[in-house]
Amino acid sequence: MSASPLLALLMAGSLIGPPPPPSGATWSWPVGDGGRPPVVAPFDAPEERWGPGHRGIDLAATPDSRVAAVDDGVVTHRGRIAGRGTITVTHASGVRSTYEPVDSTARIGDRVERGETIGRIGDEAGHCIPATCLHLGARRGATYLDPLAFFGAQRVILLPVP
Ligand SMILES: [Zn+2]
Image (cartoon, rainbow, N blue to C red):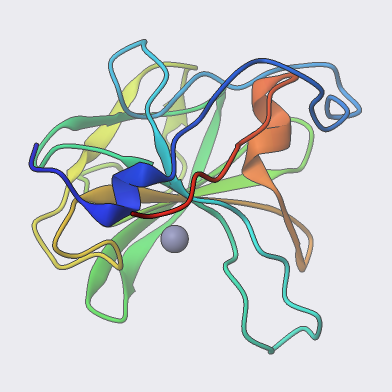
């Protein structure tokens, strides 16, 4: 992977983090094959429902790499949004995880297990262009949550871009 200013936004430390989700369950990383992928862009909650913000986190990924379900659940949506393949998995807690850009052959109603492959990173331009990333979202009802909170106690430290 070539160096990118985005990659200067490195994850560091396992210091004070957001509180764990109410269920106590933690997600597994959807990319990185078990390792912890760099977070290239953090969650930025919109101040208003339709206002600007970043409704998820961007995880560094390589083109065509596999995308895994973060937890057990059921595929409840697959489609294309703004030209990018997306897939949504609804978990027992009611939280939905969304992934893009992902090429997937999963069908609505498919049960998936934590860590199970649900697709591959699509070759459409994601919003990390020219780098490749997976945009991971988390929603409960209409509310966007910080997906990072589901990965246990950890936080992102943003390093200044040279
Ligand atoms: Zn994103």
